[in-house]
Image (tube, rainbow, N blue to C red; front, side):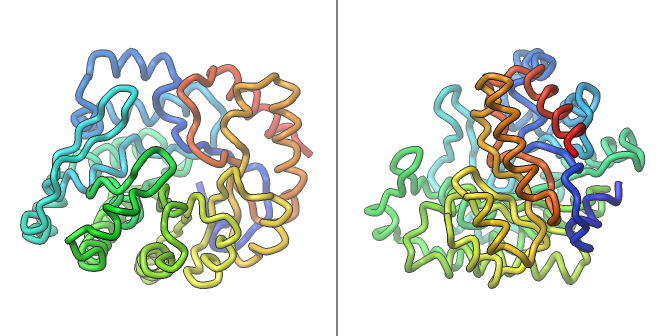
Length: 336
């Protein structure tokens, strides 16, 4: 269980620590069976027994080193009073944002609403014993803001008109979100998680002049909170390309999760102050075994002598075959 902490805190060099984003969920038939009987996704995340079962499904199936708790970054706005609905083939829909309702929240109510997640972590920790690491996570303030205010024009583009004309004070919302995210992190660690990953999934949408304010600064505040509490932290500022270097130098997390647009050789040369994680495109698991192995070898070769965690550059795709993931894990285990 200590291996991932040694990589993140002690910067131990290894390619042998393996886990995957979205390893618990939609591509697994055992998950699909549970999901078919539980149509409300939020309620499923808040069902401690089922959430624990789902978290452990990939651990029982594959030779992985860590479990990541089955939850969702949008549980935070949900716990702060915003309605969250998941529409099939469309994604999450959040209702009209009410600033007064948002600012009227308190930590006690927030913690009570999310107590089932903490219960799931406690149950999972008991099941894992000390044999595996347990990863918790949150969404970064900017990424949550994008969902809460509906700032996306389409899947990969910010609605600049809405962004510029929005009447809400983004800084005020981010400041308050950060407070609750830190509380959520602390609660998850107290429940038994070993570390936290911060998903800034829409960091790549931020206009260049605003990246300091909406990406670097809030991530830094969360990282500083975690360091003060001795909580290992991995950041994932997806889509910011070579600004990963600025992010590393300013935010100084323990680990950086690489997205699939980052050249691994560039990352190894420039991102030398953090442990690195991932990078391989999830679509490679949809290709032939030979192509998948060749891509995995590229990352394993590149990072074999630096602190590295084998993972992907984003979450496992729903159409991924479980046996394909099993082959990838076995390949990485045998790598020398």
